[in-house]
Length: 117
Image 1 (spheres, rainbow, N blue to C red):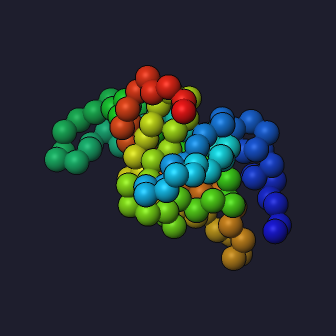
Image 2: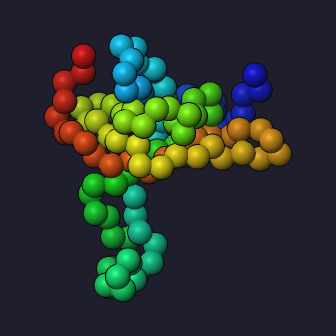
């Protein structure tokens, strides 16, 4: 498998996370960046004004290794990073010239303060 520079950077600087497929007893270790999702527009759904850089503190963007495509996971799969568990809202693989570069997803906080198993 061809490893991209992006994958190398994610593996080196990313946080340790676990992907927990629903209905499975196993967890998949992965490195990823998880950051608050910042809205870019001043108008949001419904036309209400929000300030620049608004963060609703409930949605996050995930940038993870290309070896694991979260969109291939069963519905209900979660991601645990630190003491927070996230639900996957949407995920896609970023591909350039038929080469997967990284996986991105929109996550929503499901539980905070969860002890690692």
